[in-house]
Image 1 (tube, rainbow, N blue to C red):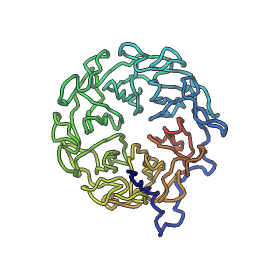
Image 2 (tube, helix red, strand yellow):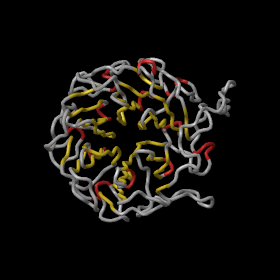
Image 3 (cartoon, one colour):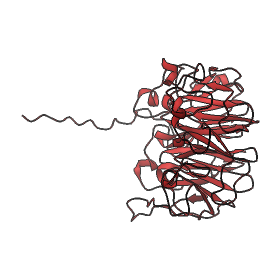
Image 4 (cartoon, rainbow, N blue to C red):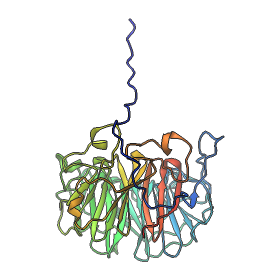
Length: 403
């Protein structure tokens, strides 16, 4: 007997779409520089074979004030470094960490875990005079005391593991602890404190001072009642204190900001929390602390909804969120009171023409200088936004005129 097949078409656009919203103050010409191979009309896919000019799903990048740029080329399990701020498209990297050369790939360089090997590197940030990288699938964070300026410079310090050789999640235990990690995806350094998004343990770990010993335990935890628990949303329903898939960290003035991608929201604390499991003050992307659905439970996004937001960047008064599954950037201007932001509509957008659009590269076309495809990370250095446009296998260096 034939079984009838019902085809469900894509839901129609909302009947009351908003006018074109304010655009984030990026250069109207799009990104000044695009790193990674640029897709041409005659190509079906972007080649992802490793080279000095190609990337595969980069998830993080950090530009330093001296012009040095380091990128987490996540899918190739390596870091790429440029000694000066790149000035032309597809400019070749000068250095590589994690592989023997620019043309090899593989988890931990298809060898043993070590001081300069990587397995899905993601978050990356300046750390005092050096560099910190979330080495996610080695379940550790690597720290260089001085900014690397060569290929395969070995890391000086490891967190999450007792040494540079081991790489088991939570050091082989079913429980978490103050000195273990499980899929850490984000890392951030602020006013002497180190913050790590220990994503697989659904928590943020905080060290009050930059660690000085391998495997040093964290001092504070957010997202869990203590250092042992690791259940999503603390084992219960979502709250102002719980997390499901925390991914990135930043500071908006003195306010801690965390992207909780699994709960489709961004969490903001007033100041720096001083106690374990401190609840956040407000969330963006949801109407309240208990709601967690993608785009607030409807197909199309809005100016106040989020779908798997992975990245958070700050440029003076602007908080810019990489709303990853909606392939867009949303921006909120800092208000007089952070509390007024609860569920607030974004002030501006980039990557889409309006708040109700969400297709990759706007209508699934070829990548443009101002389009996005599953953007995972965004960080700012003075007026340059560094965007990890992961689905397009590229990094965008895009002028941000925030003054």
